[in-house]
Image 1 (cartoon, each protein chain N blue to C red):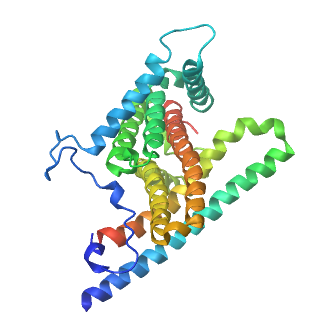
Image 2 (cartoon, rainbow over the protein chains, first blue to last red; image 1 turned 90 degrees about the vertical axis):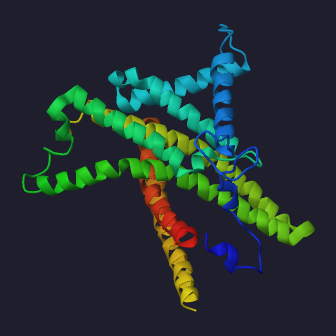
Length: 251
Length: 78
């Protein structure tokens, strides 16, 4: 944070301040058991998931009410996605992908509330999920296919001369997967919220006449709602793609 | 003085890193544009390929996010 002391004058916009992890009840030191704003918003995310999926569907009505139909919609959406992308035998792992999708969706949407903290904007959070997916998929592939899993890297459709080079590229891209998987989500969330904060800073400087920044905030906010959903969808669908690779490694 | 020059270099580098996001924009536009072009020619096949389009968008976009990350690192971490 070298910029704090360097710019004493001019526009006072700190778009990255919203991503600082703070202890909830005062104090400075953060241990692993300290309740921080991250833990608060993660707990709220879990509570929202429980509210929608457990309490919402408790009635098990034949004609669902509003909350139950939203929950059924989400379930059917993810179920169809897993079936389409990972295939019929990927459906065994549907609960994991549903968990990831619903958690990310609610974390992203809760982060859009004013004064909220976006837990998925931290690479520590997304990297944990991405590494979990990576290890799960790799171990599953080795358990299911044994040595045959390595044929994922040996593309038999290519000419024999090219195969070692392609294998090298495939291995590199395989191990970059958790990096891109996590940074995509965290970067999108961070960038969008920072943009909103920058426009809010313009509005603060202009005062009453700030029609253009407020209109821009509205537009960016609408875009962020879309991005929040699409990033959760992309995270889940890429998990499905990796899962398909693990189940059927032969090209 | 020397620190100022270093910081100036970091800021210029951050700005230059952001040009990489333009490449991601071109990539995402290319993917979606081709999807739309294909979908208008054969609308019945479009629904099955939406997931593929989003995967393509995700891959194209990740590289732009990487350049954004480099810009952030130069601004706040170096």
